[in-house]
Image (cartoon, rainbow, N blue to C red; front, side, top):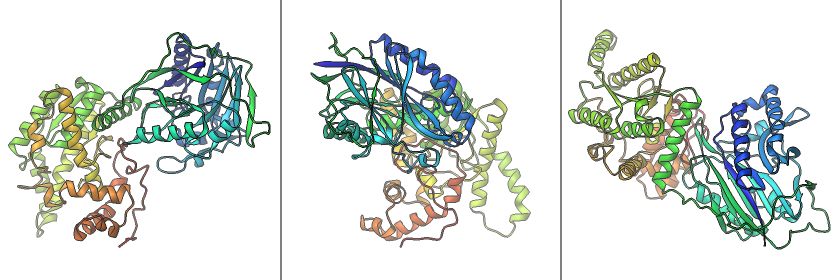
Length: 567
């Protein structure tokens, strides 16, 4: 039985940090060599970071990618290395994989299938590759593909298998959303078994703007059985021994269209190892997975944009409590400041809960009452508002004063404000422009209210104590902008609202379809109307971590001026 040791390097790269990314790649190749690997693979576009977006339109960026990639060759002595980078041919950019062999660049593969849905815009930037290589490395035959290439049941993996490849090395920058790991594993098992080909799948890790890459690299045998898995949400070098059978597979007598054979002139060690390496990292439970995605996305957003400190408005409610706890896990308590900004309508228990939360988390706590500013602003506006009844304008004035305080503090001390609104509020417009929406990063932007409660309970359980006070979890949610105000005064109960929003926002279901699911007609009409009406607010909100298949912003893009209704 032949076996090849392959190393899958989950790397956290930064878009545009070509020198820093290449240093990480060199370190990974060196570690793989030290571990006895014959093949090492790093993620899609690891040299440039993913997604580079309109940087690809700059000729200087593409040339920098090519130059830096070529300079990696000396680091690949004694191994085969597959490295993702931006290539150009005749001025046209390609999402590419460089195949280095024992110190030289032997070949370049160009991604054939370019995703152009959801968060992906690759057809905007890249040309399609036209051929699939099958590399001959002594007694080993393998192919290389990039991310989307492997999702198509009739795609390049079929071609390379027909061309004689016994192993597919697939490099990825596959973003996280809930359930994505299981979806990937199922797809890969099908692809391996259908084509009788082993698969070594390496995924990026880390946060990049709204996206989080969750790692979870995986290796499967030709029967589709998982033989090794990497951890989620952290850098790792997954070293695994792939058994390939007694004889290498040979190509068919007739050439396969689109397949080109490349003789590498180098053979990795195919002897069975004395101690096979088959590491397994168990997948995280759902709430833990979401929490880790929020922590990683928040940490990397701040650090990659040059910030180390965060300010958060603490209302004593569930959303600000969860954001503060995420920030502490991401940045450390010494880099988080919670600010309580009570008004005449703030309850005593909310003030106590905010203070207790800060103490539980070990963060700096400031209390800056807004009543003097609130009273002054009402007095300033008294003539202009004369003859009208108090309403939303007066309520939102408080939120905007709080936003002003937080932004002033952050501006003064070089920090970033983390906003606290969740997906349910962003969907329905239950948020104030230039108030609680003011800030640099929206941690819970893609987290529905019901899930916010669930991850809060999980975090308390994981801590073995109430980091988030139990009273925060028990009390009815309220913005506290007028006497005895509750969210339920303006919105359906979140247990009803969130499934309607999921059907409409993530499932693109029509109003009648949602009513047919068992929801009240009037409730559905109301919810859909306020979702549609508040697109203009969402367009002005800060970026936030994507954790669902259909996040606002990159995933869901609707016109603001839009009169279409599907009733």
